[in-house]
Image (cartoon, rainbow, N blue to C red; front, side, top):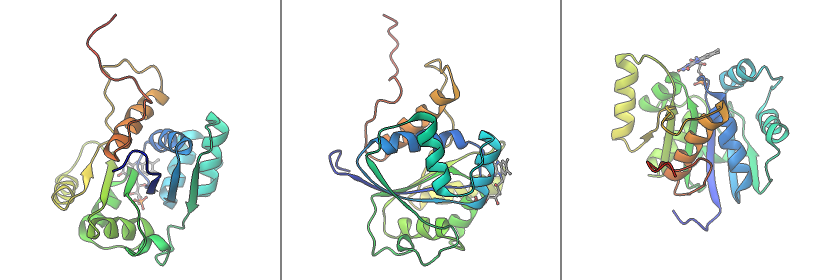
Length: 207
Ligand SMILES: Cc1cc2nc3c(=O)[nH]c(=O)nc-3n(C[C@H](O)[C@H](O)[C@H](O)COP(=O)(O)O)c2cc1C
């Protein structure tokens, strides 16, 4: 992926715990040139409400929440799409995007993408991303995993998806929830071919 080219991304939020990961990724995304088709699921909105004690009802509310909380530069264009709208532009491979991220990704959405049963726009766009051989990055969160979760993730890996669990490292001494979010955001951007210095690189030297 060309670093200079504006990013064209599909970003879905499913109803796993970890709204901080989506929020910090969105904050960084807002600052870089490009456009993103953004689809949160109803369960994602519910979890976001619980985890931030925020009165959000829609994807636009989530974007507004991020803007108000951290005041990032606004260099990015967002297209909000509805979870139920299986006829939206991103339901078709004739539209072009560089990659899709599901952040965080529930075990239910993992299962749906794995089976190809695409009942909503997140599952359909992920299915299209895979069939068009574009980059699909899933950021699952659950613990522990049962055999079904593990088999589904392995099958998705074998089908070309990248399984990037919400599993931030602690060797750089994160000081806040935001640091944990930025660790994951940095890794996801790198998988998309973008180097953003959101979080210090590891160095064993202490001076
Ligand atoms: C507060 C809360 C936390 C949840 N955390 C997780 C989780 O970490 N992982 C997961 O797979 N599901 C979790 N769930 C369950 C999913 O939200 C549920 O399976 C939902 O149907 C997922 O739908 P979606 O994938 O379309 O967003 C959670 C639900 C709630 C209300």
